[in-house]
Each structure stands twice: as C-alpha cells, then as structure tokens.
Image (cartoon, rainbow, N blue to C red; front, side, top):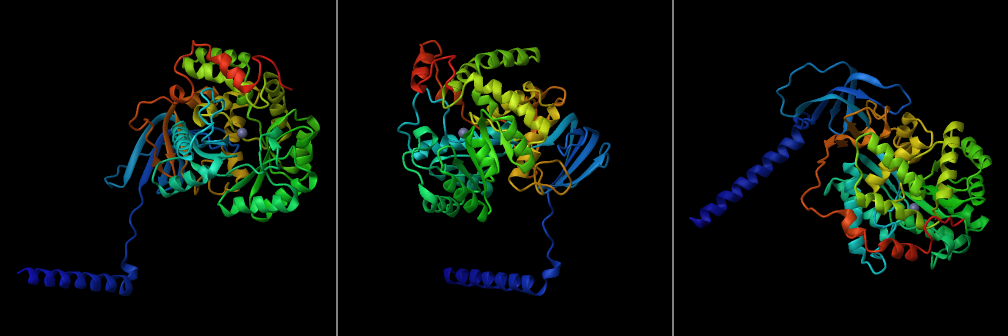
Length: 472
Ligand SMILES: [Zn+2]
C-alpha cells in the first residue's frame, strides 16, 4: 500500500511537471498576466509639485505601483473587481511623497544619554530602521542618507527595497569621505592625498552607495577635485558639509549640493544659481529658543499642541556641532535669497527623528519667507531632480511611481496642515499609519524620561557649548 502511494505520487509529480513544461514552452501566448491592483483616489485635490496650480475636484488612478491616470471630476463607475478599490478622499489633498534629504538614520543629535558612545552596530541599526519607518508614516516616502556608520543605510535600503518591511526608499551615502582630522578634528582616520581620496570614494561605491558625502573644509584643492571627479566618473553626486569660504570653492569645483552652508554669501548663492548647484540648508538644526516659541505660537493658533518632550529635546539641538541661533538667522535670509534667485533648494532636517523634524523644517521654510508651494517643491520635485530620478518620482504625474501623501487640509493655506496625514502610498501600496505593535516612545528612550533633573545642564556640558551663546 505504502509502495503504491509513493508510486502514485511520483506519477502525479511527473505528470504535473510535464504539463507545466508543455504549458510554458508550447503555449506562452496563452499565459495571462496577473491583474494589477487598481486604486482609484477620487474626490480629491492635487498639488502635483511640477509648478502647476492646485487642481481641484480630481481623480487619480493607480495601477500597480504607478500613477496610470489623472483626470478631472469624480469617479462614478462601479467595480465588482476584487483587484479594484475606489477611495473617496472627501476633498483631501494629494501631494507627492515627501523627501528628507539630510538624514543620519541611526544617529542621535543630540545624544544626552550618551547612548552612541559604546553602542553596537546592531543597536544603532535597529534605531535607524525605526526612524526610517516612522518617517514614512509622516509622509516621507524617500530619504537621502548623508553619513551613516557601517553602511547601515545601505542595508536598510535593501531591506525596504526587498519588501521585508515597509519603509521609505533610501538613497545612501554610507560613511563620510573626509581627510584625517576633517570636520574640525572629528574624523580620526580619513583619506589624505589624491590617491587615497580616489580610493575611498571607489570603496564607498563598491559597497553600494548612491552618493558621496564629503567634509570639504579641510580638503586641499587637489583632494576636493579628486573626490568630485571620482564620484562623478562613477555616476554618483557629491554633497558637502561646509561653510564659507569653502562653499564658494566647492561650488566652483563642481560640487552638486551644499549642506548647511554656514555663512553662505550672496556671491556664492548667485554662483550656485548659475551652476545649478543644489542647496540643503537644514535650518531646523540651528533653532534658537525664539524659533521654538515662534513655532509653538504658530502651532497653537492652528490648534496643535506639541509634546513637551519634543519641544524640550528640540532646544538641545543647537548645542551640537556648528549650530547656533546666529547661523539660523543667517540661513533663513540665505534660503529666501537662494529661492528668489533660482537656486534649486531641497529639504533636509539633519536632526532626528526624520519624520517630525522633516515637518518642522518645512515650517521653517515658510517662516523664512519661502512660499508654501515652493516649500512643497523643495521637499519633493527638487529632491528627485538632485537624485536623477525625476522621470520616475518627485511629482504627481501620469506614468510616475505612486509615492503619494494625502493630507486632510490644504497645505498651501498653511504648511502645518502637512501634519494632517490621511494616507501615505509607497509605490501604490497604502502604508499602515499606526505604529505596528509596541508602545515605546522614541523620545522617552533616546532622550530622557525626566525633564526636571537638571538634565539640560548635563547636555550642555556634553556638547561643550553654553546655552544661548554663538559658537562662531
Ligand atoms: Zn548632518
């Protein structure tokens, strides 16, 4: 009996294989492709971020991972097809998925508990993933990483691309490229001389990075040119953390993007406009107390209450690095000037978590005098442009990948309405906006649980700055 069963199953298996082989070899034309999931978003308004006006009363149709059709009016057809879902957005606003262009997914800025000092790569990597996925729930469907230890950003990029977790698409830089003692002494061992510089850039690319992030201030001219030339020859853009007078030099040498741009001059801004150099000001990481108050007032008038911990944590950020209220004031003026003369500006927070801080940066753009429309374009279209993927992403247009953010109220009326997230789509798939299981707070864990214990003083000391004083 047993023997018979084995034989029978062997026969079935053999028969199945023969049928399958026949089917696939003899009848290829008869294979029907699996029907794509179709999502109809109707009764909505579109801010497509191409520079066009707001389009009212529209329908957007997603087919699989792409936007297949955009048309005027409501969708009235009825469908019984299980692969089609029709969503009435009740007058909500569809914008392209947002981008945060200056992130360090695993980093903590500031790090009042000194968590990073002896942290394992695994622990840092888990935080990077949490940070990225939280960013997606805020509407950031893409992020650019500009300095990450141990290629954590490259690994998470793969994890998200493979679909193991739903996260933003990541454009990764891996770690910084810098000479020894670059970033004001921060880099212990870097690349020195042209040959080492070329080698380090090539090694980063070998590890799979999408772009190169450099500290150009301490680079000699030939090192700077070598870094840019090598990256360009491998099809990667180069961006630099810098300040004047190095900004002008880097722009002249053909850098693609400027991060922070401390002390940027009008002359440099005009050169950037002429050369098509992008600018990522990261104003949020220079916030002063006045900014915090201004923002709180603004949010209150809109009926938002900011979490006390977030507010407190934010006040610490200007003690790190070169950040200061004076820089913030200068950058706000520089940003406005850059937009006015046609520099392509992108939006990056530097600070983390990338979702909340990315939104705060958008608010800073508007407070700096940039229009809501130009702020949205800086957070979408211009970013895809810098990454060379504008043909696929960055705007709401037919044929593009369906990375979308849907907000309940009009962000052109008030940019803070970008907080009213109704839905997020990444490549046509709706993102679960609820934090999946778990109840921990990023703020509690990485910042502090007790705000009253003189912790501010400790943090100030750790950062080596005095509260309210400008470093440079
Ligand atoms: Zn940074």
